[in-house]
Each structure stands twice: as structure tokens, then as C-alpha cells.
Image 1 (cartoon, rainbow, N blue to C red):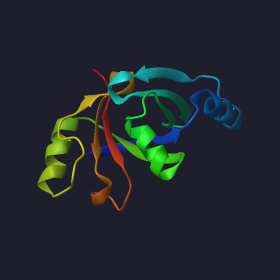
Image 2 (cartoon, one colour; image 1 turned 30 degrees about the vertical axis):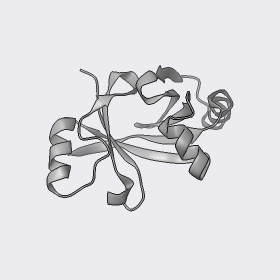
Image 3 (cartoon, rainbow, N blue to C red; image 1 turned 90 degrees about the vertical axis):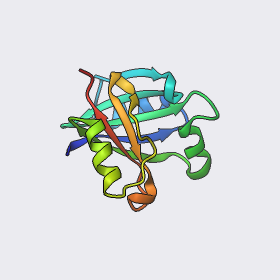
Image 4 (cartoon, one colour; image 1 turned 135 degrees about the vertical axis):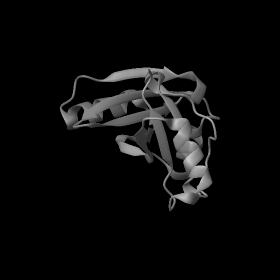
Amino acid sequence: MFKKIAHIGIAVKNLDEAVKTYSSMLDETDIHRESVREQKVDVAFFHVGETHIELSEATSSDSPIAKFIEKRGEGVHHIAFEVDDIRAELLRLKKVGVQLVDEEPRVGAGGCLVAFIHPKSTNGVLMELTQKAR
């Protein structure tokens, strides 16, 4: 079951510049930054109420973020939903005919398990499932 929107992912060309912009706009100084090597991105998270904004910059020209920016430019990349049991949710979605990018979760930012739902199944929106690290 989808519990809440965990974050909105935004693809950016320059993370440092984007962090300056969002820090100023959101009046936020509590920013979590990390590299997610498996996904070839550097990310920064901003708290906005109970959800987050995730800025993602590609660290390699073959990363999904680099490919996204090449095709569409900077902007909203995905919406992430928090779930309690990501594996059970992936099985449930597959059973009801949802096309998945990831049939098995992988480790994402903050040590969370993540998996993506293909935009073909969600009216063109890339969706991510995320389960908090235990």
C-alpha cells in the first residue's frame, strides 16, 4: 500500500547551483547531500512539510538522469511513494498488470530500498517506490 509521497525528484544539470536556488527559495539550511553510486547521481534533499524535494545531478553521461536531461531538459523526473514492504508491493503491482522498471528493489539514497514503475503504466509519470532502511 502506498503510504505517502516520500519525495518529488527533480533532475538538474548543476547540483550546487540548484541547491543555492532551492535553499534560498525554501529558506532551508538543513540539506542532506549524498552520492548514490549505483544510480550514478549526486543528490540533495530538502524538507518540505512531510515530504522532500530531491535534486539529482548525473555523475556519468550514461546515468538515467543524464539521459533524462538530454531528452527533456531539467525538471520533474519522478514522484516517490513510501511503502512498508516494497517486495510485496512490486508483486501486487505486477499481478495487476503494471509495467515495472525494477522487479527487484535496489539500494537508493539514505540506504532505502527503491524500485521504479514504468511511465507507460502511469500516464507518462515515472514513479518510484521507496522503503525506509531498517
